[in-house]
Amino acid sequence: MKIASIAAVALVGIAIAVYTWFAAHPIAPLPPVKQTREVTVVVDRVRRVSANEADFSIRITNGTANPVYFLGVDYRKMQRIISKKDDPSLQPALFGVLLEQKTALEDWHVIAPCPDVPPPDVISMNSGDSQLIESGITNPIEALCKKRDLEFSGSFRIAAEYFASEEEANSVLKSYDQGVESASRPVRTVSEPFEIPPDGGTGSQPSNRP
Image (tube, rainbow, N blue to C red; front, side, top):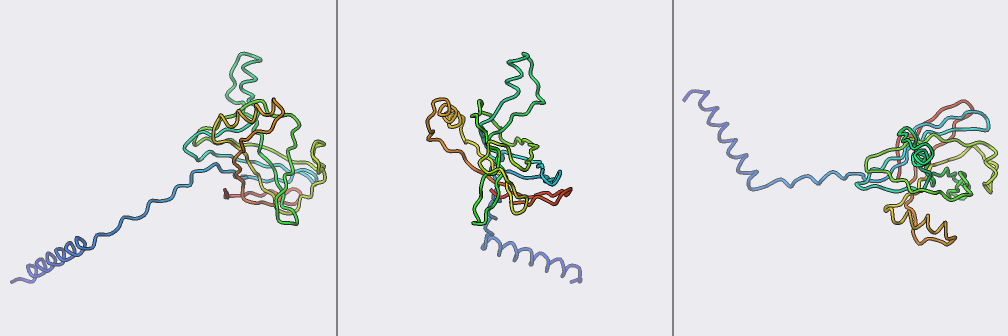
């Protein structure tokens, strides 16, 4: 028998042996990849404008499979009422997007904003949609806040409050009108902690923690 024929017979034998082994020992399928499906808050940029002012670029994304609902002001609806025209470039103002600072006791305290008027609208954010929010803070903080003196040192984060259903959000608006407390409670999601850079500096926060 030629060497080539011997090699071919050997390869066929190996193939049969491998097939027989795998047939007797099936490989378990890999577990499915866990998908992160949540509402996320990411601070894309933090900029120190001056000694007493900083601004932020905040991105809120609905990574869930369903719409979520924020309280806020629907400027597009206002524009339609005033001018009978629709301006797609107008973004809603989302209430419940809060700047928080870590205290010496290792808890988080809301710094701003401090609204004195309840929001008039329910704002929906569809699955997969994002909204970019340009915001800022000055020292001293607006007069409506109880604490007006702000230290730019330490850890900060952005919190966002939303509702899983339109009915829950509307019940909160209704409770504002009636002057009573609503049984509905918002879901909270927060950004990764970040620091405000020194005067003239710029920073960013690349990731998110639910």
